[in-house]
Image (cartoon, rainbow, N blue to C red):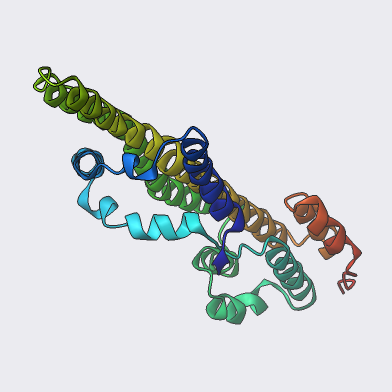
Length: 264
């Protein structure tokens, strides 16, 4: 599993553009440092998020962050080839010959589907069971996107609260215009933190998790269609044609070029 270049480049570019703009406008970077505002926005946003979700979901934040930053190897083409090979074996030796394959496959979803087929389960029930598996998995995994969306929603509000607190402090120094002006400038840093964290970090990460979820769902749907085609005893060439529709154009052409052995 490698680092997702698009995610890293996007985060660096967005945050870098913010600092570059500040420098070009003549703002000293030390003026952007406001520890109290950082404590309020990070602590307040996380606190509000913890209240909004179950503790088990909050404990999964590191896993969701890892999924956003690292590109998981989906292997759509590899899965399609695997299913075509299973279709070939099933046509030659029968569905019962897949029992050993079902035991040795690492992916629980594919393993369950093959086992249902080997056990002689009706196709309608196989589809219903696997679609239920997908729905439950998706409901569980979409929590990551919801958590980062929630943090991104709380951050700007916390930034406004920080700005209000800073302005209250500034107004207390109205007898000294220079100190008051400096305090006002510091107060608005809190708003910058809130909006910056939301729009440059947390909301983009939520969007990335949404993309990851859609990619993984595509893999499961491809697997489901392949399993049903195997159960129906379809010709491996037809199975390959069906599954190629789920692949990106670049992978689809390579997949189509690979010969499929004729079934007996």
